[in-house]
Length: 112
Image 1: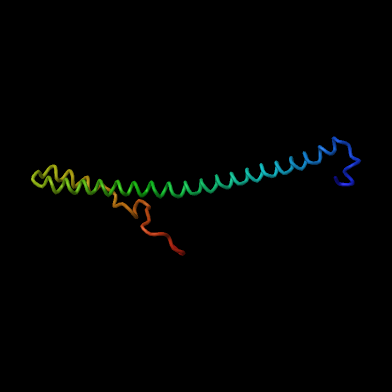
Image 2: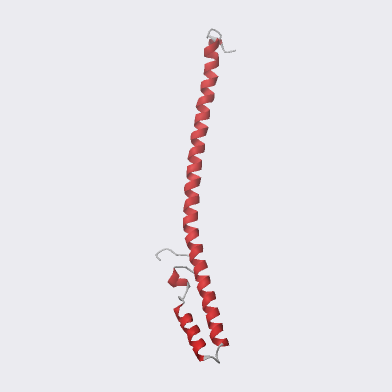
């Protein structure tokens, strides 16, 4: 045993290691809390950016698919003029897709 530790009461001998363990435990809890908060912020930033991008990409894909179906319907209904005009009107109302919907086909470069 340490020479200065011999003449201390038993309660003090128990209190010193307990205090050290308590301080280390509090430090671990605080570090874990900060790490989880940082992880949560990072995940939120990823979800916000990627979710919007995926939503716009899926919306553009849906618009392209709808336009392709309308175009095929126009081709298939060439004999029926009234139906063909209805499909042509549907085709014209479809957004052009990609850039109009905010979906970028390539990553941004500095200065864009």
